[in-house]
Length: 308
Image 1 (tube, rainbow, N blue to C red):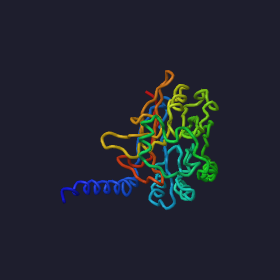
Image 2 (cartoon, rainbow, N blue to C red):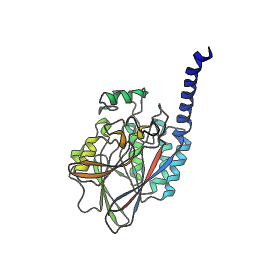
Image 3 (tube, rainbow, N blue to C red):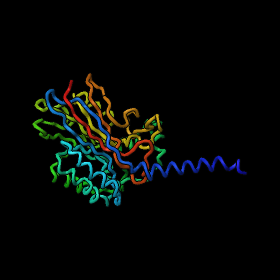
Image 4 (tube, rainbow, N blue to C red):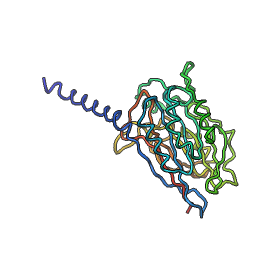
């Protein structure tokens, strides 16, 4: 009898322990990723850029709030927010409180699907099945009629009031330490809100650096930015795979980006050009799947340095 039930009970116990670790520890084990990107003109000093993404704030997430507040101590030259700030319509006040110290710095932002719509309960295995079927998450379609509307307008108004640039299918500029920085942003490709034709034309000739910003790193957006000659693209959305295999990595990206580039710095090639691509693994999760495994939540401090 012991032999008959010992193995399944052991597997069940191991699975329960893994779930407890993924939800109770790793999902709240916040990290800072540091990367260096050589994209500035020669002779300029480095710039420190803080990228925050996929916060997915849920009311009551005090530890996440406190950690986000501490990021202002890094004293970045500017902040890039790549979307999916919410996972709870009631979480706006706590989100803005968490980001309050960072709003004192120059910044730019785009939104993701979870800023506009509340999440729904889904079987996590569907992400893998959809990948095998050649589909990707929402497969480029808006959420169904009746989806919960998130109060994204309150986030937009607060970001705008702080002076952050809204890059929703548009361009914007910041002047930082004497450098002219040009940004081109897209609304979320995951729900087909991207309109690259509105911003096409490539980097601005009088800018010291041009950056493409988008929430979900779908290949159509990365190809467009890269072919137009942008040297740097910043994105989020993937959660780094969220549930990863140790020593292997991500199984899915919830878009058509390959899993080898699910998080961190890589390169992208299109149209005879090469761009640096940084994909943030984000610091949150959908409220219905509050687990991470072999993929801690993160923000990234990118140090932009002069080109060789």
